Image (cartoon, rainbow, N blue to C red):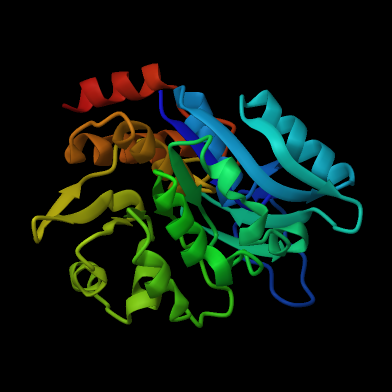
Length: 307
């Protein structure tokens, strides 16, 4: 079994579900449900991998506060190795408020400990214990971002494969350092909005061609439309699975987990794409990113039914 290290952010998610009109300044609106749950793209991806049966460890920083206690306990319960999570009393654990409906969601985030992780916190000795390194929230991880390309290069030198999910850039600058990092990434998982921001291309296929560096497999996540990548220069598209969504929070991170689970087992590319789509779709059945993530048996049943 391949061993995965996720180096990333840890935060609490507060999900407010079922808004009917989005709140305007000075006004108050009601929602249908609320849930406090494990957040962060990195932790949601790690939980998805563990749920599927992949061996996964997490390296990150959290505050020595109730939010950090909550997140570390949730990660442990999910089957993630948290022995490399550092608790720092000088930090506050981050918080994201997700205002969500079956159609879409809006996020408000306090970064807190998210910005504290540095590339140097991931030592070469640690890397040598694993087979694959995954990083999410490239733009949110302000401390890790400047050294992310070097971290991936060190991972490759240690024999690991690498993957990166950029996440949204809240400043919408889509910095040029990402291209340098992609030169050291084996897999890249942007969604459609992120892909457009990074490349300036309106069409997904044009954006994929612009990022084609001869090394990185770029997989565009298209939400309810599925996903798209280039295979030998030709577009390869896989449709999403018809699941009645309750909350789309973290669906892209569950997609990453599904794709990686299949890819690390050497499955054909189209199977990896289908595993990603299945995990992303199934994760939308419950509130929050981790509450209804699929196990391998659920994915197999969905794939068999859809074949």
